[in-house]
Image (cartoon, rainbow over all chains, first blue to last red; front, side, top):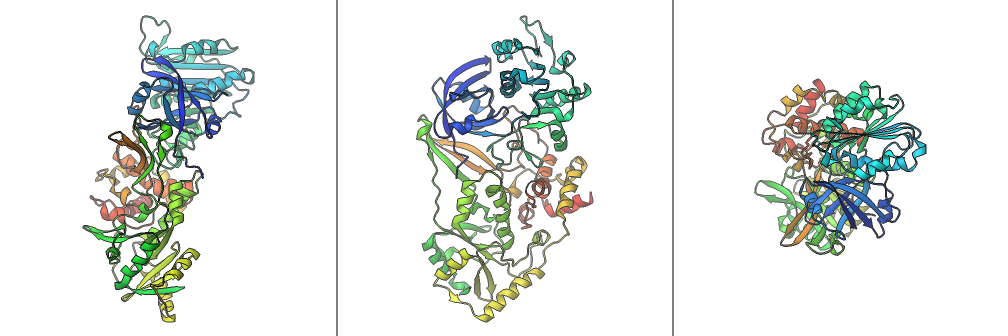
Length: 275
Length: 345
């Protein structure tokens, strides 16, 4: 029997400074369990740990690299993430997973896709965006709405320019607090909704960001005619085990770590989520 | 198979069990009885009503080490903690607590991912159930009858024990119990009269009444869903609550835990420790977001988890009516009364 609480090691192969408080780590895996971790699907997460600093969940921020690696983006916010940010290339961390569900990959095929991300909420959606762009012809139009606090807090700048080079693929950006370099939109993600050119009746929407953003973005999307069963949000909860045992992430009879973290708005309504 | 021993000679039985493995039995502590690993057979004490802490710690200890490591050394040198898997004997468990193990089995051993610590300990352990003393009064906090459990139910035990005057009758319930009982030469064979006494005692247990209400699983599960938004109700129910968490620590079916790293002078352990949904920071995320900041939300979570969400998830109520949470609550919050009030809300 596999003891799912025990981590295996992963090696930091590359570190990219995305923003003043966020780094993207490229991790490589070897050993027996490497393959089972690398079979992860977009939207799933892993538990990452450092001896002495504990464990925390991170959603995979990229598709797996077939040569045995993946990326996660980490904001420096607590004890573990502060320690992670001090690590250098070749440092070893503990990982276990993958955990959680994925997005409705089959249902979203041939449909228009809308992504709405706030702050580091872009990280969990990036793997799904990469997944869709990898087989670009299998989908209709793709629009990505991304809001962050300041222009400096934007992640994946160069990659986003490449995303836009795909046919029928658009990104819309906004910031809360512009600086002199910023000539784009200002305000929360909802200010960009009038720019959406997708057919709301048939599009799939994927949201990730602060709880308050998800709440208001869904409200506005429903007004625009998007269907509640086609709106998906990646939820965040305090998680400790990833396996539905420890009780921290329960919302009613759903465990965010096993039944989620990705829920349709139809499901979220049933859960009457406390926020 | 039925065996017996004089209660005053219980330490002889304890000594034999200690030779065979680890013995966990009630011992008298300052404020009451608790299960403890026995080092001195004289310490086993059956003169208790029920233990303060539930016996869940036998399979799900307060602290469970996962990995040991040294700071600054590579993770590959970290060592998984080794489980002591000697045969264990859990001696003197009340029927309602025995029932709690079955409820916990569903969560730890049957719900997709198996918890190896729970399973291995459970497999290594023989359970000696022990009927309540039907000549003693029922504690007013108890309500196990409401959950369909009676004071002398042998189900779930490997060996079930009842008190007969100054003797203890031990009956094998499972094959595991029978194998063990046949090896215990320190016990005497029970007579036909003892068999009759045992059977009558089990039946009489049904007349030993705790608090009781008719509880339909579907009805209470639905009702708690319906009153989720009744903030007035939950605020009233939780008005006195101190968020101390004692209800969850003494509970035989509360299983929430934290996984944390403890380090001291460069040596570290990753372990799990009991946690409680009644604590303010239970749902606090690193970002500062906390979905359950209010005490009414946390009490609602606890009651609804046991009497609604658990039914939806696993098909059973996550409570055995042992009465501990009511007995030890410093402000007299009573789960039975809350469930009763919820049905009328």
